[in-house]
Image (cartoon, rainbow, N blue to C red; front, top):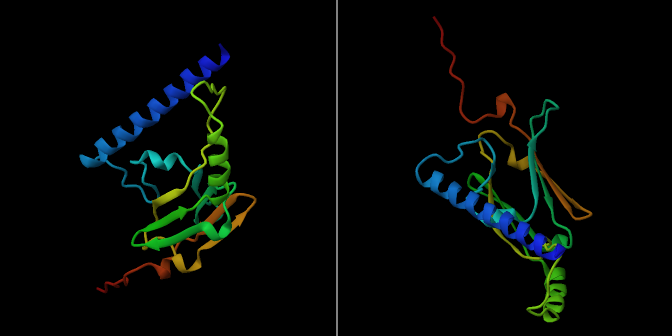
Length: 170
């Protein structure tokens, strides 16, 4: 009985995520999409994986920080680049793929999970909006330790901003 309720809540959660994804796509198609300064492209349900925190620092630097939960990944399998206005993340989950294949080979249709939320999967190209006129990509710092990838991109200083200020004299 306990497993049946867990399955129901899991199904409800997945349905809500799919609804949110479809609603987001609908809004973006009609011009209601997010025009925010930074963040991820939430129009795709694949952005549920990996878990991520995105925030700006309040220490005066105004850096944007991304924290990705990437437990089980090898550092050399994580690819992080800037393409246009976006930071792009992709990764291959080698360790988990082998374990997942071994675990799945023992599953039957009669397997009833009490809770199944662990996702063992590759990360396809995910784009996170980081405007070039607001952040200094050349000073980006990325650290991967204990399954957590932390990327800090400092905000451009006033004299670093694109463009030239024109003084008006009277």
